[in-house]
Structures are given as C-alpha cells and as structure tokens.
Image (tube, rainbow, N blue to C red; front, top):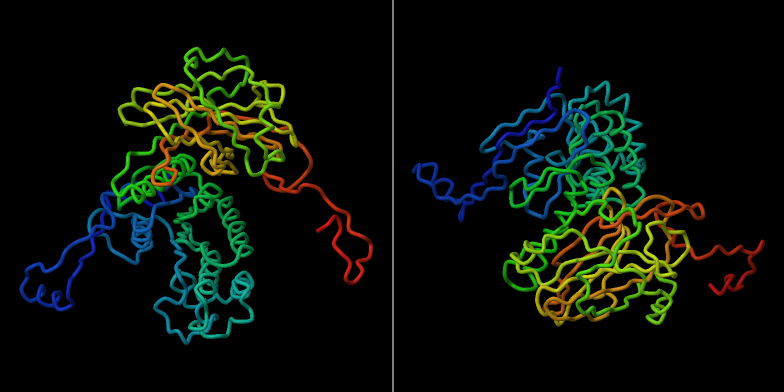
Length: 475
C-alpha cells in the first residue's frame, strides 16, 4: 500500500492586492468596484513530498519561496489551488513574532511550543533541553525585545526540533548565528534526516541544499522551474544568477547560459585518439592557479604537449542557433610526463587543460576549470579572466587555457569541468559551462579532515615559549 504524501501541492497560486492609497480599500468595499492591482507571488505550483524526504527549495529574492512556505505552514491562504498536509507540521519561523515583546525567552519557548502543537507537559519536560541547545542560558529570563534576530532564531530552531512533528519546515533558519551554531544545527538536521522525518528546507545557500537534501525545487518568479536532484538544481540556479549578472552588465535581457551535464564522459582516461578536427589554429595561454606551488608561467614547459584529448559530444548546431560565441570543446588533466591521467597522486602537480571552440571572432574570450564533489559542491577553480591571462581568436579557431595546480585533495573521486565566457564592459559573462566532463580519482595522501588540505607543513613548537621570542619558522 502506497503511503500518502506528507505534502501535496496542486496548482497553487497566490496573489496579493496592491492599493495605491489605504483609502482605496474602503472605497473598493463600499462601491464593489476594484481599486487595486494584483501581483502574483506564486503561479500554478504543483509538487508532492513523500514521508521521509528532505526537499530543498531555492530561488532568488522575491521568487516566492517564503510565500510557499507560509501557505504550507498554514499561516497564509492560497488564492487558487489546493494544499494537503498529512501529519503534524512544525515550522521554524522567527520566535516572538506576534508575541508580547516583554515575554522572557523561557515564556517564548512555552508559547512557541504550544503554537507548534506541543502539550504544556511535553514543553516542561523538554524545556531544559531546548534552552541548552539554544546556548542562551544567560539570557533566557530576559525579554524578547532585547534579543537579536539570531538569538530569536536560536530559540525557534531549538523549540521546533524538540517537537514530535512528522514534517519540519525551515525557512532560512541557518542564515543567522555564528558558524559553530550553524554547524550544530546542520548536525541536528542530519540526525532528523536519518530518523525518517520529512524536512522541507528553504534556503539561499546551495551548499546546505547539497549537504542535506535528497531532492530540490527551483522557484523563479513564482513558478516552479525545475524539480530534480540537488546537483542539477544547483547547476540551474547558478545559470540563473549568471544570466541576471549579464542582464545587469549589458542592460538588456541576456541569452541563456548553456549548461552541459556531461556526466562521466571520457571518465576512463584510457587511450584516446588525437582530435582530428583540432587541426585548426590553437591559441594557448598558461594560467597558473592561485593555489599552485609553481605560480609561474615558465613552469608550462615542464608539461609536454602529449596527446590531444577527444572532444566532448557537443550539439554545435544548437550552440550556433543560440548565437553563442564560444563553447567548451574538451577538458583533460595532464601529468609532468605529458600523459592524460584520471588518477591523481596527493601532493603532485598537474595541468588542467580546457579547450574552447570559437563560433565567431572573439577579442576577449575566457576559459576556466573547476573541481567539484559528487554532490555538485564546488571545491575550487579559476579562469583566465581571474588570472589576467588574455585569450582571443577568430571564427573556427580553438583557444586553450592551461592551469597548473598541486593536488591537495583527500582520497576519493571528484569531477572536473570547464567553462567558457566572454568579456563585456570589463566583466566576465558566462556562456557555457560543461559540468562533470571528467571524473578523477585521488589516491590517499596524509590523513586530514575535509576534502582539501591547505596545510603546507607542520612546525613543532619549542617546549617552552620565552617571553618576547619570535615565532618558529619565521612566523
């Protein structure tokens, strides 16, 4: 038997009435003639959330995310459509909103818990636990009017996670507070996720979506643009942000940024035939990355040319129809022998080569590379624009950028991608990004926490530090 969805939204729309003058509201009521304009915060949104899912919602400011959350939480009615919520819901909103500002933090917890459906007995039993998690013991008897936004959000989060609600709704609750408390909240949400409860998570932070969610929604101008994996939602969201930047720079609506999700194309890194269509002139530029131990263009000579990589499977006709000036044609990693590799050794230097094909003359082209996790989380990368290395070429030519980097990644698998952009009014505007063009595996080096190790070396401190003595190793 199929379980009922925790949340079911069908053709949901929400309009707000806008009055130019407060008196127009009265005249409208008396005359029965409209004296307002309407703005639609949501338009025909439909989706379902199954029990136990952790679903993230992301979008730009004003996209309609908070309106959607308020309707699901029951604090706002939709104009059109239906909402069905099965099971109890606890929404993490700012604690104290609508409450007497003279309430103490303790009284705010009690009122907030009651509003979330907790019994007074349950609140009393969990009160000490809630206060301890919020880390506000010293201010718990102070009135809410003396609390900062971050302090109120701490109480709200601590109260909500203490409920037994089957569905937890979170709206930017982790956007405030210090880094340690945010990390503590993320750990708690991971625990809730493992418990099988449903979480509906609204955020501007795509990293939180990658970390927590099994699925994500992209909202834009009140409409549901995409419902997919967090990785694909993240790619689409980044493209939207780049399109907005282009519009601001050019002053007119920009062409869509093309995102090619290659997956594991060329992931084997085995024997590859030369690029037969790569006989056109190639304009090469060396752009050392900022984390390179050899941040000197002269080190390029230490990487032999090697074999030419196979071009990616690209829909060139589609690129031409979109009037794109350049696209990413190939991405590869080379070692110091000039061999293409997909297995990297910790601590060794490599060269990432990104080749772009020009579809029209470009006096200022940009190529870049980046490394990301399986989830889609970006780890590092750069471009010829950031490195101040100029690229230019004519229609039909290829341009290539080579980035030297030292592998400081922890053992495991990663994806390498490439990007192509054009310079307009002194700004680099993304045209094409080729995601997951190459999978690489890093052999384990030294043990360290996290995916990247930035420690150059460890200095042993003297047994006793003398007053006024200098730091060891010149620091």
